[in-house]
Amino acid sequence: MSTVKVDTLVASDGTSPVTLTKQSAAKAWVSFDAYTSISVSESFGVSSIDDDATGDFGVNLSSAMSASTYAVQGTLDGSPYDNRALTSATGTKTSSAFDVVTLNANTGGLLDFDNNYYLVHGDLA
Image (cartoon, rainbow, N blue to C red; front, side):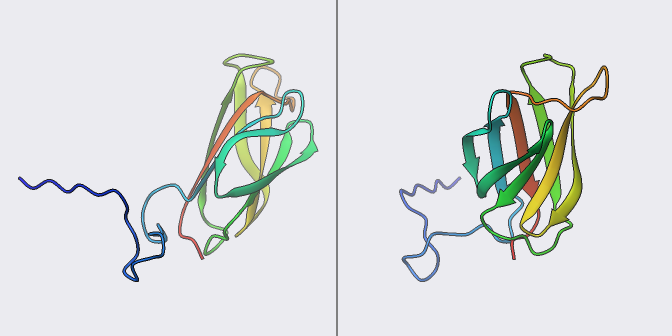
């Protein structure tokens, strides 16, 4: 069995970082709080979040996807209703942004939650 050990992985030109343009890894992800105000906790490949209305957000990608048919996976938890929340990618979806809504699973009403997590899978442009 062989072992590969590296400290730095670069593209074939020897200086550029390796890109994941044709890999199956997530191309973008974000964790944000929307309960009191929009604040991004951590992200990769996301430039900003738009607060469109209560429970309605836009996620803007730093790098465009090859088409608007990429997959978005989301989950949320925390205040105000632990374990009673639903999320859905909905509305406008372009190669560089998508909309999501967050709902109270009991009433179906739009609500802001404090722990919002979204992943984007697909091919970068």
